[in-house]
Length: 152
Image 1 (cartoon, rainbow, N blue to C red):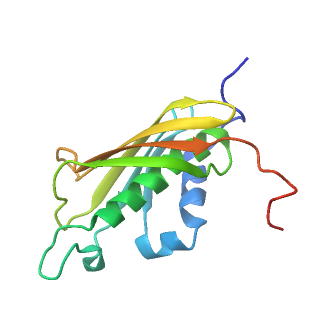
Image 2: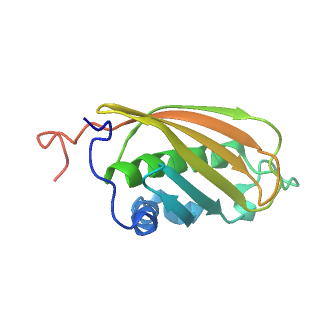
């Protein structure tokens, strides 16, 4: 019996683009889908640098909250692309390894396990060709939405 609750979409990159376009908050961040592999459960996302991402006045380092948001949206997208629907965050842990300078960020999220109730995902966030700035691990719900509790 397969471990994945639903079948992955046929076009994983299109599914990733749809996931990134859905939440209004993503309009603020403007993440860009670079690649998606539903079978492996891996997505790669670029977050174009914006001066408003700054950690402090006069610093070009990126605020940790922006990095956390990127980790969360990338991890969620890796699961959603694999199962074909939303996967709400249960838990997210981030290790900040070094300051991220004011440049584009790249997140690679890979599912470790996708079960009937919970998925686990690892995320690496870095620059175009740099050592990671942060790593994250998250847990996401893969339970089918409850039609009684879902908004109409």
